[in-house]
Image 1 (cartoon, rainbow, N blue to C red):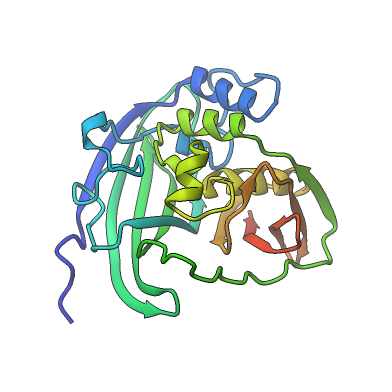
Image 2 (image 1 turned 180 degrees about the horizontal axis):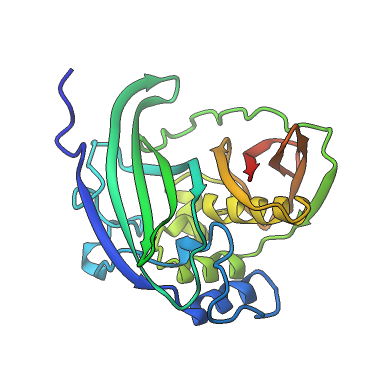
Length: 276
């Protein structure tokens, strides 16, 4: 089987881990802006930086960057962040300059019950002057447009044995502010009419990386001060605003198993946290 022409494609972006951006993230999460220059950037907040500088004319109708510049065009217009793996090697400090090198790995096409699917793996290495700080292996799923009247996929039930619980009440302002912070134009996160009438979702979709950020942060609160080494993230089903959802978790040997549960008990995401 021949490789897709985009396999191995790479690009590098440079950015300053700016305090103002991190402070705005704290405010977006309803936290006091306590971070300072020299502090370690909280886990999974790297999404605030290195985002492609895409002109408005280069955006597709859904608000995404048009496919084909870096991410390949597989003939499947819908794409979703499906999780992946995070590894932390050394602290990424606020106020430093850093680079992100992104490389496309595996590209596969499959046929599933919901139609044609594409799977793309992208590895992001973020480094400062002292070396690599973190590595993210990101899984992206491409899908066909929704068919009119197509049945919705049934998500599995979430575990019911969580030790820690926190309710999150998302609203359109939270999603809009997060989209703005990561310079992300996908309309399913802020345009209710488009989300319902074109994409076929019942409400505004909560960003997968935002849910992962919340789960990782909640897990760290219950980790007894241990240093985070890795996170394995699997997006299972979408969450919708303004419905409340729940962050839950429990110890799993030396690790922590965290998950997000919808208001009706569906499993939305799992995150396994590993520590030093």
